[in-house]
Image (tube, rainbow, N blue to C red; front, side, top):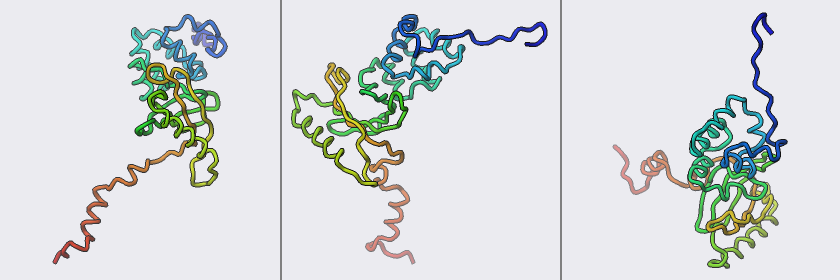
Length: 212
């Protein structure tokens, strides 16, 4: 402490992970994000007093989402979903959905992480109605069983599988498969011809007359 000038520090705060019913003082959206694990409690606990105050003082749910994103507690994808009120499916079992990697006719693949271990994973979620497409559901679980039996260094390994109640459209359960996450370009971008490759093919085409 310098002479005549007291040192100002952040007031003591109870970590969310230890607060229990103390979450009641939080805005409803933030409380739900923390209790579902969409916003990690450990990340919230590490924020400075000023950063927490800025989030708690946000006038709307949209502003809360924006300030959580600025603080690094929501990804851009999560923020869009939160602003749209689409929180269902952002937490699947032990996994927190972070981003959308791709989609097909029956499901979506997400980049995610384990809530506690923070291990990055890829999660394939089936989003079709079991009542309308029972064959698709059966085929999905057959795929899950087949993938879990595959063991090869060049094949992405299955880690986990489950079904999240109420995470799908109209509150339907969402079956999901958890796999290793391998960062990099997807197959579509690798197979899509670039301007340079198209130019090279034209230059060496056997049907093209050589330039004199």
